[in-house]
Length: 119
Image (cartoon, rainbow, N blue to C red; front, side, top):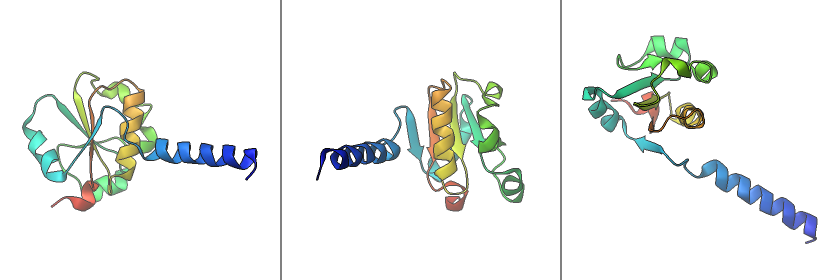
């Protein structure tokens, strides 16, 4: 292999590792653990699915802020409180959690499996 191929391979590996490693300050919890947090006063619950998905099936504690508009609506949330984020499968909420961390939220929690895992 020549040097260019090595550089490209190293860049690809770094990208893959960075993409899949958890972001510091973001926790993952189960749906049962999310339900247990319903009793807490200092927790905000956000559902980042589309309004149609939210209307079809949601948990009452979760406020609908679609992922597509989350970055522009973070002022609706308190940065000093924990934010629990959910979507349908856990993928969009993981992206939402990263957005919130970049916007300065200290404690962000993603619900693994999302609404698809809700029993």
